[in-house]
Image (cartoon, rainbow, N blue to C red):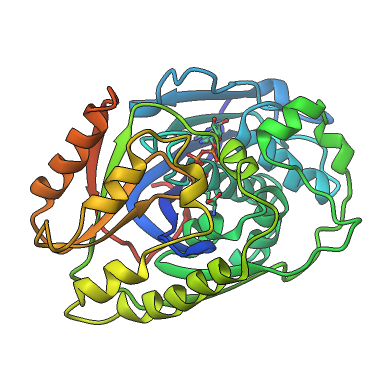
Length: 355
Ligand SMILES: Nc1ncnc2c1ncn2[C@@H]1O[C@H](COP(=O)(O)OP(=O)(O)OP(=O)(O)O)[C@@H](O)[C@H]1O
Ligand SMILES: N[C@@H](CCO)C(=O)O
């Protein structure tokens, strides 16, 4: 077979919530999922080429337990097939090899599933020559991952506030992969579904250039679905107001240079998700309570990254000292960790014809 074109899709990871911004705030960080794709000339006219799409993983993500390589089960290719099915294309339209390099740890709260969904939508777009804009791709992403914070940040880049408009009852879409596998739904269930338009709304916010993201990543997974299940359906009014007040202050405080550590630290407090997730993440309570700018110069604020278990520490300097304290607190719980100091990146997902 001769390949007709080579493509590279690059999607950044993201950290969402940032304390009080549950399901609202997302920030794009300098760790990338990449797909190297070779699309081959079809040898004959066939309904679909799914059996001739070879999916491999290399790099840090190589051999990740539990990542299915079947195109109907892998989150990236399943998402692509969903996008194609919604456009009356029932399968990949040519033989392909897709090599995935994914250093974004899965189930850790760094938006690995969000990055995979964005990559899948971009793969479906290019495979079906659909010509989707990024804003239209966001609609497809949000039909799959219903919290907008990770996928919007991964797609658009930067520090983002977003929301999902109300969807009416007949707006279905692939629920998150774990739910889909349980229900054994097939992609064709979504054939020719009209994906509603302008589902997501977002705004890019300013981020002070001095602020870096220290991510302290425990070596165990927390499923986002599980971490969302544990949250109450009803909230005390005072707790809601507590978060709303801090969210508004935090957005402005993170844009100001030089950053005000006391203002950011106070504004990063949360009563909507972190208190309930403490039971899933040993050490979280002690870390958030005791690691402060007053005890760690350079630190601005600390919180759970997404649904966790990763800890996000925003800081301008003194990264080693800050991360060592958190490492030691997790170690007391017999939890091993990996530390990555990342930059906030303004560019989101990129799809381009490789040279
Ligand atoms: N690169 C990938 N390739 C295939 N599947 C992936 C990939 N990344 C994530 N997934 C799927 O998503 C699951 C992890 O999603 P989950 O939302 O639970 O964690 P997360 O995205 O790391 O955390 P958060 O959503 O809090 O940032 C994995 O178990 C896997 O099924
Ligand atoms: N806002 C989502 C982010 C998941 O990455 C949650 O906290 O469940």
